[in-house]
Amino acid sequence: MTSEPTLEEVQAVVARVAGPHRSPAGAGPDTPLTEGGFWLDSVHLLETIIACEEAFEVVFDPETDFTDRTLMTVRRLFDLVRAKRSGPG
Amino acid sequence: MPSLRDLRAAWSARPASYSRLVWTLILALDRLPWPWGEEILAKSFVARAFVRTGRLRQALAWAAAQPSTERGRWHLARSLCAYHGRFVARSALVGIRGPEALLRLVAVRGEEHLAAAGRGVILLGFHLGPAGSYLALRVAGHRLTWVGGRGATGAWSREIRQRYQSARETQFFSEDRYSWTRRLYHARQVLLSGEHVFISADGEGGEAFSVPLPGGPQVIGVGWLALRRATGAPVLPVLSHMQGRTQVVTVHPALPPRNADPGLDLDACRRSLAHLLGDHVRRFPEQCYSLVFSAPAASSPTSRGRRWCP
Image (cartoon, rainbow over all chains, first blue to last red; front, top):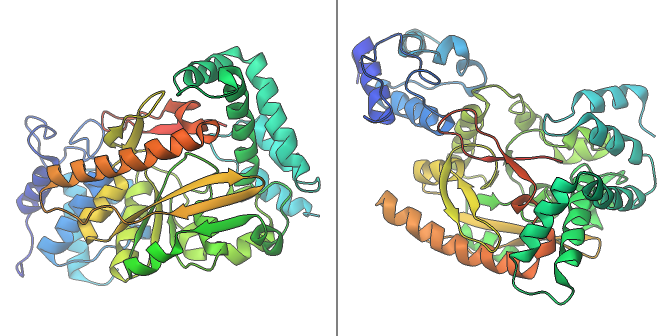
């Protein structure tokens, strides 16, 4: 994928990893990835991150990129992907 | 003799699963010559079972479920408590001051399986004996990355930490809701670069499956399975038992190669581990404390792992 990722594409990645039984009804960009939302555990988050790396051609830094600021919701994850594509760090 | 600064650092490194009393005891007993601290903790844990009788009942119930032993369930229950205390001491290296002393207390078997497996191997540990198998492998000269938390390493001597703890892995000791995602991501990078990782199969986290064992099932987590699926790395189970005062760590042959069908892959792993762990529990029932003294660590619907409670 070479064009800029969209919020919908990132949400589709999350929904695919979560599967239909974890995806809450009416899930949207501000649905939490973990408790109270998609209920992704550490392994599902890992799978989401790997899927994003492959789909959007980015590389994450585990020490700085996996925080509440970046992994709280689909929108925050989208912001992270966009930031990774737009420059170093 | 540790400095006041070392003691302060050790105190602040108390793992959440260790009570203040046990951690204080560990740090105090560390001043004694080895193996006094181990002996005192072993006896303390037996005595504690008679005070907190719930633990004694747990141990007796578990012992009663084991195939008949020569000396009976009371002996097995008592041994279980003593080994629990001894392993708590050993995981903190109580009384073991430096690398040379540690070298005399560990032995590794089955290294040929590790050599045959090639590069980028998942070494899969279990809490069915003394902890710290990854440390024993390092002492034996194997390079690997530990995928897990700090554990009792805060009580290790400065010399041992400097020799056997990498600065890179301590960056992943912090505990928050993303700590395991960070560790697993880092582990995947390590495996893809061709180096080995060591991860526990039965720590905290979601459940992949359980293995029926005498006395109750062993819950097997999903972390190592995710790494296996993400990298295709061979998985070598590693079991550990105490023989006299030596921790014997045995590297077993690799689990069956990964099957593209996740269901079949899971079944193959379950069968292989059921055979291996069943044999270990039958041989060393008195050392399998984690099957008895553990508590659920549930924090979400997907977290069904266990938490060790020294």
